[in-house]
Image (cartoon, rainbow, N blue to C red; front, side, top):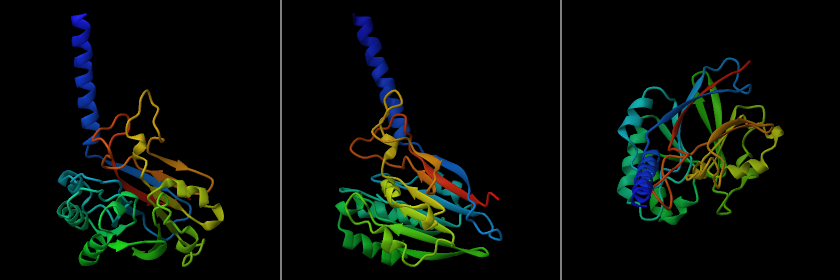
Amino acid sequence: MLELCIILMAGGVILLLIMLYEARRNVVKIEEVKLPGLPDDMQPVSIFFISDIHNREISDEIIEEVKGRTDFVIIGGDLLEKGVPFSRVEGNLDKLQSVGKVYFVWGNNDYEVNSTRLKKIFNEKGIIEIVNTSVKVPLHNGVMNLIGVDDASTQRANYPLALDQVSPDEFNVLISHDPRLLNQVRKEDGIDLMISGHTHGGQIRLFGWGLYKKGRLDNLPETTLLVSNGYGTTAIPLRLGAPAETHLLIIKNNK
């Protein structure tokens, strides 16, 4: 009986260490995304995407890995949560700005803090919020529309309004913290790529099962969808089967 208890305790300690390791990983997943909507004459586009930072401090290791390799940065919501000091947020934003121009969409946890102060920080640092609208990003010899939709889980999303200034014939990338916005996306909207976070890949997956699907890149009838496991954690600082991740998206034409 004593031996069994020791084995169980040792197994529990090992499992806890694995969960801590997966939660604190600093990984940049390089995703080559081939899209027919990328204009024939446009060079490949490189985007650094990070979502669900929550209370983590972004590792210098990640910044050095993507610096000089990306055209711009997208934060896919949940930059922070209640209790995270703004000094840490500012430090994270400074790091991301050393990589490239930073674009931001709001997530549900971003609204747990003083949003007026957060907007002031964005304004001071030149972070571009995309809130139920779109911005045109000139790249190489072409233009990309970044379409940002506010957080759906807090009933702030307005997808039709966000589409108001874009054409389905243009190169369109949709950013929504909550991937459930996919339910509103139609093929005729001309969304070439949708990127999201929010789910943490389930965060704790037991025997392959989690509350949400593991982060993945899917080619769907409506669009190509990337859902990230995210970089931070919520509720408990642990992960299992859905390790922390960030993404370097290399977008090419697949014709």
